[in-house]
Image (cartoon, rainbow, N blue to C red; front, side, top):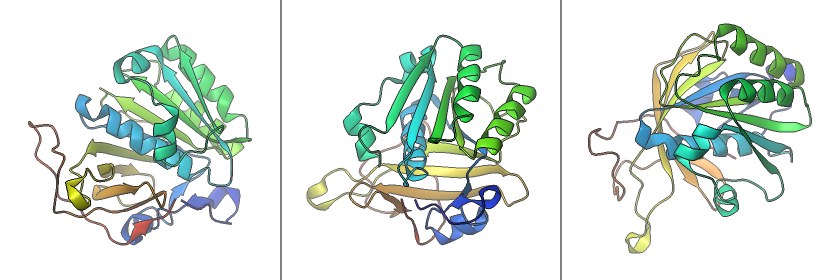
Length: 246
């Protein structure tokens, strides 16, 4: 994922997938809040992996990713190890994780972090309703991100989308992967839906696969699946073309 040379207010990080970048007006905007919701509880790990890949892609110039987590999120969804972070595009030594005792502490830490322009991206992960994250709190986060130019990726599990100041809102689910030679498991694959976007199209779907070797997203193959999604949810169709470069 490469950062463009546009002014800060228009700086975007393209995926490299033509239909996705076109829908986003060139890519994900820096200095904005972007929300990512796990489709179901079973999709928590996939949603986290997708957000980590996006965050590391937005810091290709060498910035640090700060991942802030509520204690409940860390307890429910586990801990990403250094090797896993590297597999998702991260660089050793450029990732920090902070665990907060409650939602209010998490929000305060996120606002403080967004004021540090030296960070490449901030991930804020919460579990459940998070009543403290109301429209006022969301606007406070959006203003802090806009002022510093640091993007905030808001990762939500077991939560229903509510009005917010986010630039984009996404739904993420696990998807079947395409088998490698020898029937080995394929790369991490995600069904993503752009639920909402300020001043842009929404309601669009893509199936994306993470290429570990090239550290980029690409359009996923729709055949040869070897990993099944949760049994109570059928695999979704997807669209998109070309690729998303990390």
